[in-house]
Image (cartoon, rainbow, N blue to C red; front, side, top):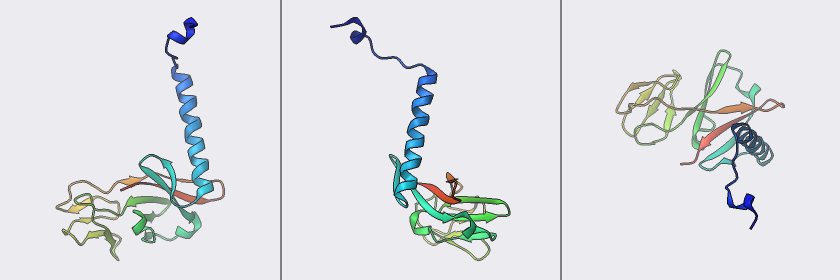
Length: 144
């Protein structure tokens, strides 16, 4: 056996970061090619929410409620919030005033996802999203 085979391969910080970046780019490319429901990482999937221009007006877009998120437009900000209550994971309903309501136990959340009334104690998590060069919005959603 050669001596270099006896020692474990070591990776410096730079090599690790390069490998992690390559994995991320590969995962993003898979998501773009596979469309809705493509696997981004274990425990996550990426949902293609379509063109950003579809969400130009202020408000809550509940089209992806069953996929696990709401899209919220507030001025120049567009973000995704989980559509599941942080108390017991019941699906939330978007209200006309842009707040969110849980029919299971009565928790309410403001338009930014902050708890207003319990029993929920944790705010709704904002979900990571990104836009590709063609202006398509993608949201990373945890698998339940």
